[in-house]
Length: 335
Image 1 (cartoon, rainbow, N blue to C red):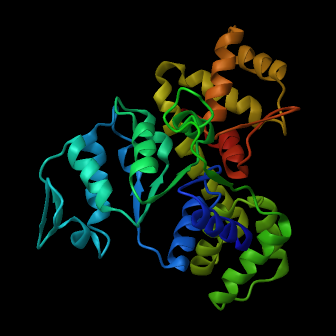
Image 2 (image 1 turned 90 degrees about the vertical axis):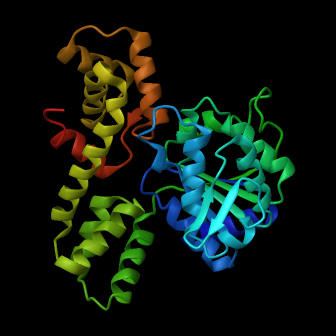
């Protein structure tokens, strides 16, 4: 993680907008928080996942997340004590007027801070133009912004930095894109973690974990934490990880309603090979569900790519998360 940390610190020192992207469990949040704490800067962490159950996000909903974040930092009361529409008392900060004006006044009070929006792509589900709000901060507030997202395609659609008609167009930004760790770095990561816990592990166990979790730092962390407390073997932890990944994917697919069954079958077909070509996916889905129009299949594949569940390569489509791939094959029954 040393190189991504250096890259993030450099990006934040140089620019006003930093984008941290990568699939689920690639270590985005950990990277951001580790770097900000190391840099000893005052930051506000807004977790957009708190709004995942909200169908259409409003200013009021966003202010609720902002209010919660401000009450978790020691300096929150100090910077907001004279802000119009904000009440500062013994029990913390409360927005008295939950309006756009209050939001803008609050943002100006965050001058000199770093504003982090985790899983920012979720803010697309709103009648409020949050990309416009980011552009406003960029132009008028002396604060730096970090946005992260695991649904990379949706994150790009939200930011639209390459769209001449989008609010953020033309504003320089730096992107830190995280990927999987190579085997040797995965091995070093686990050995360092177990050493810090003062736990001796043999090479065979490390090698098995490196092979199963295939460089996904979140799953490597999950294995290290679990094994250090319960001595569970890599295969057992991998099975639990697969069940968890399948459950999370199923929850994401619930948003497609009655079309979910098609999404599940597409995922199953892709999971059955290292990389599945279009023709193989279409043939596999139609064998189970009957005819599927080409444009419908194209939309499903695009949505799965945008959501971060699959990746598109030159040779075809693949599920990059080994636990999810196993979960789709073995734990999707009855969904």
